[in-house]
Length: 170
Figure 1: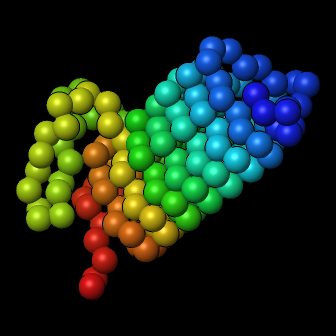
Figure 2: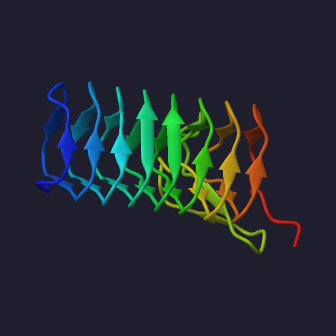
């Protein structure tokens, strides 16, 4: 833990956790390592960071947001009431309040990822959330089904349920 990190006294940290310079962990946050927090990110309050999570520099994980086995890029925001499981989130991504990234099919079969050429490729995994590329924006209460890809710069409107790859019109 970096000496310049600001950790509230009402937090719980267990396991191997790396906390860089300028990180702020707000009250009632729970962190189960292994986890990595890059410089100047803000976590909480009431956040839950589960094992194998990486939070990029300058990112903000807010009130009642849960991160499980995911990578969050630089300067990305999941401000409150979000669930991010088994996902990869790029840089400069904004996830609106209540965004849910589903990571398990209802039938529990392996999750397919639809590639940019339109082909389905099995991930070989029972759990896989979303892949959200840089500069994407998801509105309030968006739900993303397992294995979906949101391409760079895309905006998903509030309350949408994403069941297919979202591509740029370009």
